[in-house]
Every structure is written in C-alpha cells, then in structure tokens.
Image 1: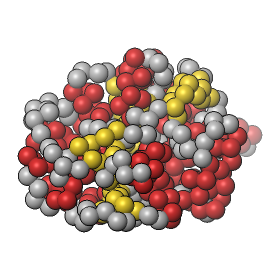
Image 2: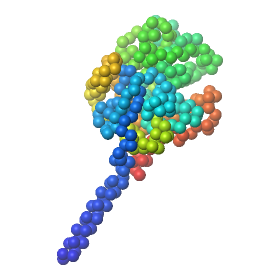
Image 3: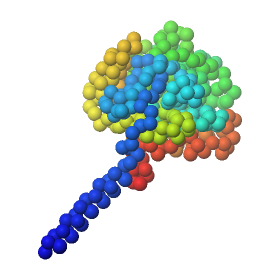
Image 4: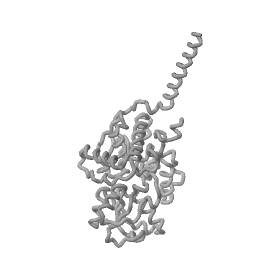
Length: 342
C-alpha cells in the first residue's frame, strides 16, 4: 500500500514538474532579460509615441527610453537608426522600402501609425480657396512633412484616381514643413493646401477656417503606414531587447483600444506635461482611436507591398527588387498567432 502511494506521489511530482517546464518552454523569449537596458530615440513635438506610452504604463520595464531630441522627418529618423545615432527609428513604410532597396540592413518590427475610421489624415485648403477638386491642385504648393514620403503618396494617389496625368502631377509643388506648422502656413497663404495627419487634422477641423478635400481612409480604408525598425546588427545582438520593446509597444497600442477615451487622453496629457519639452499639450484632446491597422501593431504584407508597386510604376524600383521578408518581421510581436502557437 505504501509502495503504491509513493508511486502515485512520484507520478504527481513528475507531472507537476513537466507542466511547469512546458509552460516555461512556451514563452521563454518573453521572460529573458534584455541585453541592452536603455534605448535611444527621437520624439515628435506634441505627440506621445506608443513606446513612450508603454514606458509610462510600465510595459517596457526593465527597458528605459533615452530621448535625444525631436525629429520632424521619418526618413531622417530611420537614417539615424542606420548610422547608430539612435537605437530605433520610425517612418513611412515606403521610406523603409527605399532604405532596404538601397541595401540598408534594417528590419521593420511593429506598425505604429495608420488610418482607421476614427483616426485618419486629410488634405486641407482654406475655406475661401478656389481649389475644389484634384485638377485644381495642378501648379499649386502643397505642404507635407516630408516630400517623397507618405503624405505625398496619398495626394498623388488622389490625383491619379481622378485621372490626372503624370505630367500634370509633376507640376504640383510639394513643400516640406514641420507638421505642427503646416496649418499656420496654410492660414498665412504661404501654401495652397496641406496634408495633416491624425489628431493634427482633427484639431484643424475643430478650429475651422479650412476645408477638407479628402482623407487617406476614404482612399484606402484602414491600414498601417509607418513602422519602427532596428538594424539587423542590433537585432542579432539584442534579440530580447527588441522583443521586449515590441511586446511593450504592442501592449500600449491595445491599451488605448480597450481603455475609455477620456482616460487615454488624460494619460497622454500627463506624459506631455511631465516631460517639460515646451509643447502644445492641448493637441492630445483630439485623440480618438489607436489609428493602427493590425492588432498590437502587427504588420500586414499589404502595408509594404503597396509601395513596392508604387515605386515600380514610378521607376524607382525594379519588379522583384525587394520582397516582404526583406523589409519586415512580426516575429517579436506577441499578437502574432504563428509565433504565439509555437
């Protein structure tokens, strides 16, 4: 009898240990200590980035962010990541495609900006502007944050869908200016039209004085159009750091999706005021939704292949020059079902 009881006890202990080992094996990467504990990055004036929100929520710990200054250009931000001036950078997916095509060893790991029904970007003109439709933009000055990037892509797509010839599209003058200054430049008549993204657009609508011509959501629906990237070398040396960064950022994105809007706005307000960067904190009052296509910032293939086609058609790339696997990976995202099931 004792021998049988002992046998049962041993069996219980063995099964219990096996269960613990199986549970540990199912999520080893998420429990491992980050190799690098601090990540240098550039911010954006009057905006709270998802990694910044993740840190404030405690989702990045033990990782810490080190702000080295602000940027007004996605291409500049990802170039800074390539040169090692920062550890990660974010930009329009088309800019990342061009960077990879130029043989830069980088990989996009999570989407952080996109468009949905509630949060989207739009093309504005003044209320008294004679510009009513696409053809009226020919020969006009259009303000964007970075020529050749996302905002120019949207305006160009709007013109193309309206049947405007490439020769006439080339007559549209795209002018670079910081996002927070675009609306003022439009009001001062230094620009004929401006493209404003997400909450900057919604603030302009609330203030009045400008008329909305079209939005990216009207043109394309919901999707992600900008991603964070790391260099291949950084990922190889610091895989647990990258995983923790992506995990925390993904959780922050979903926190905004499931948390009451008033609580999200209050949190964003608090973060901006606490960092003392002499910013306009009122802009976050126009926040409506995460504005990211995939759950937890998961990147969809179309988020990049759209620009493959655009650049091939414009002669910037050759067909097949860049493949999706060259540009992005969802392997670090906890919302990636393929990884989660392994």
